[in-house]
Image (cartoon, rainbow, N blue to C red; front, side, top):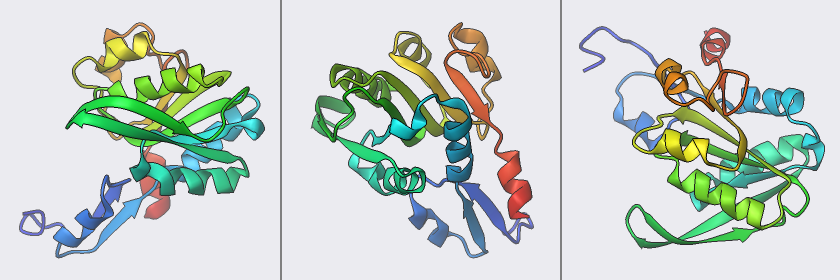
Length: 193
């Protein structure tokens, strides 16, 4: 459909599944937010050198190990046991966050149930502070309410999805203030061009 409309190249941002690229008959470049996440961590998180990068599920292990390696810090993983689809029964932390800053990294945040439960688990395990970096902030359903009552210091997202309305509806969400900080994805597009 995009080809018929005249597109001869597609640029995406942190695809949820890299296999999606194979569904197009034109070139696809998938850009990653990792460089901006690294920059934000180094410039904005106190004591990041003693932090732990955490994946909220097994699917994000590759992403967090890459970030942890580039920062020369430890990583951890949260294993989820489900009752049924979309219902987590138990979370188990694999790794040590005791007395450290925990930085949760995921590709997207939709209803924020998983990341908020993960934040609770990290604090319970002794993390001093918890931050989240989610490339795509969907924030549907109860997400804003969950974030307001969460244990996060900040939830950092890119502006691949406009966040103006979410920030208005949730007093804790303010650009570069309390809960949500925006990383501008237009910079990635310019650098890729």
